[in-house]
Length: 433
Image (cartoon, rainbow, N blue to C red; front, side, top):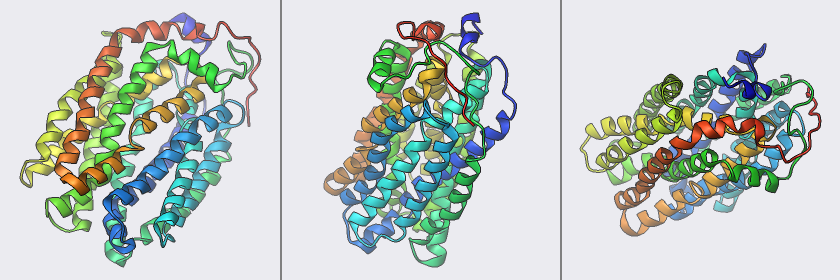
């Protein structure tokens, strides 16, 4: 590690780091269970509430819109108060709201509860990766963040499987939403008892409180941050929309099996491919880093370019080859998870990292999956799901190209981290219990 970085990054693993990582991983697991349960049962909700595919897409967009718009506020709060307190509040709030989804009797009630799920997750989203970044040195960060983001494929898979199984067993789409409530409350309470370890105990450069606009000005001068965010936005646009509609597509458009069976198979495919890809992506980025300074961008971009034709092939291949191509496409598209988020952590100063992650959340979802589920639903209502998937998947290609363009900037931007805040005053940051 560059000596200059040691002034703003932890030089060793902080005591108790692995316990904190384990708790954040479990919370992130339930985060994605809550998200994908809706996808698993949306066909049943659509039928009972008598709503169109476009309107069903609004439910996904309501969650993502509130999550996106509120995240910057919680990013600022994470730099001013205990991040674990925010995590606990967020987990409890989204769990209550997810349980409330099971009580929805009309489309407006469904939209309101999903919006509050988004608010809860916005409290958690910017804080969690910054806690991890402050607990582990930069040499370990790629692999550690990959472990944390294993919760995305595993939680998504459990959401599909749990939603499909409970709905099929009880013949009631509301039951899965009630089931996620108790563990969420317990995890939120557990978070209140963790201590927030800031990157240093005392003074460090640039710890002055800054506005979101000041942080934006800083980040716009960091090409790696800008290109990584745009690449994530392109990927999120495609994957967010396609993942939401996949069970519906296989059952209703490809006429393959029943919803419970499809959720189980798709969940297993997502879990296995996503777990392998997330771990191997982090390992590949860390392994290539001494050989190629832009390794995190390289592995992300190449994987996206490979995944694009696989996803198109899935739309025309017969079963069971469709599932094989889905597996390979999911593997490629999850390969970037650890590296892309490691880039965000490595090119931002610790004192603005929570806000940087929050701004990233705002941009990638506002430009990404806030609109894509509704857009796919609208196109499916007019032209069919195959054409809708084809149009949206083009953004995978765009994301891959953007990431490859970022590779040449990464080392320079990492070297510049200690100097990002030179124009601002220095003042102490307290450690929060």
